[in-house]
Length: 342
Ligand SMILES: NC(=O)c1ccc[n+]([C@@H]2O[C@H](COP(=O)([O-])OP(=O)(O)OC[C@H]3O[C@@H](n4cnc5c(N)ncnc54)[C@H](O)[C@@H]3O)[C@@H](O)[C@H]2O)c1
Image (cartoon, rainbow, N blue to C red; front, side, top):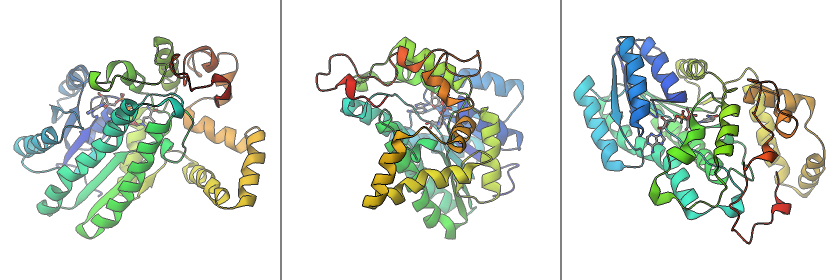
């Protein structure tokens, strides 16, 4: 898809962070844009911005886990803009961190429900409509660098994102002959409000967490995300990826090299010699190249996380070990803090 002017975009999570950047960039490219988001305060703030720009943007309050509401949002889009979207961007997401062994069903049901289930619902709602409209188009998901990297404290999130990456590849193959392109956008740190989701965006029915979620944790995460990529810059990477019909967009100068390093560990996992190599490597500090690539992804020198706080605006506000980040709730008697990976 190369021409955007006059066409219709539907963006989940479009009222904040990455989704808002996408709504701005595609609106500026001349598209009519629907921003669909679960948070009314985010929608109100975003719409005040778009009204000030006289942009053709329509807001829909939508929880992406609600399938009936998704179908109603698709109907509303057709009513307001006259047709189904040419460009569907599935960006809504949430996260929360803690040891994998402390995870509860609620931790999985909430995070996987939004991050993976929300993408499934978007695809099942819109793909038949887009095919029937016979106008081609493009579908993108805002995945995450986490799709390539599981972590001891990111189990529900990384698993959901790895699932989305795999899912999008299936649709990339399936939709080729319908003239519908598919892109998986895999950023690392973004300047966004995602740190709020664990305290403000989590429904009561999924409130039983195994993780230590505190104000301190949120403050630390906020300071990390303050160094992340500008959502408008990220949206420019996505737009270029869509124009080039590129399946995978890792939005960094050295993106392809990052992927090469990340997936090479699977080659080692697949043999006894490789497992020994990985065990040896785990004892070594990251190489200079790995450090440089991490800094490119995070927006600051990641080694600062375990050392003294860096200068304001250059990294986390406090050392991670001093806050509850990535820890379990105190009352879980099977979690041994001495066996924690971080
Ligand atoms: N922030 C990062 O560092 C980062 C890194 C990689 C990937 N991502 C991904 O980027 C996407 C956007 O997140 P962001 O960082 O811009 O965060 P954000 O919180 O600023 O924006 C996400 C938006 O999604 C909305 N949302 C949450 N749950 C929803 C639901 N059930 N239904 C509809 N809308 C819902 C929120 O209200 C919010 O407006 C997410 O999928 C996230 O996983 C973020």
